[in-house]
Image 1 (cartoon, rainbow, N blue to C red):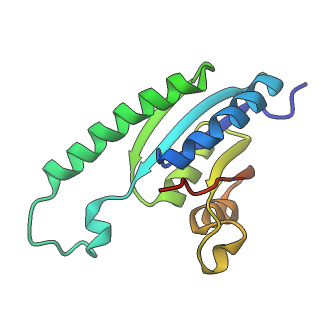
Image 2: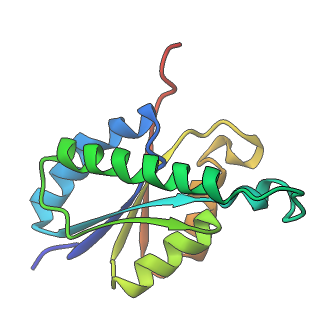
Length: 147
């Protein structure tokens, strides 16, 4: 019996998220687990407190299209069967928890930059995912790419 049956990889689709590919593929192979991917786009209205004097629909649509394209590229780089590739809109931690619950995932993998305040250990997103998850969470340390 395998330790994990369904792994959810939450990616921000940054260059740093490529550092997760080898580790997640190896873990999924070792566990013979299903693998799903999720990328969460926080709506632009979140950044402006929901009180924006212009229509952001076209910009949000472009962000969604770009994310779907990058998700396809990321999925191919994994070189492992992906059950589901999801690009969703909402609050990052909330959406990751929702998807993990809906998909009956028993492990969520997130990249951790570990750069901010309380997040010196985990990173703010990884910390948020950890504290609301109903399953195991693995935070994989990623290094910032040289500029």
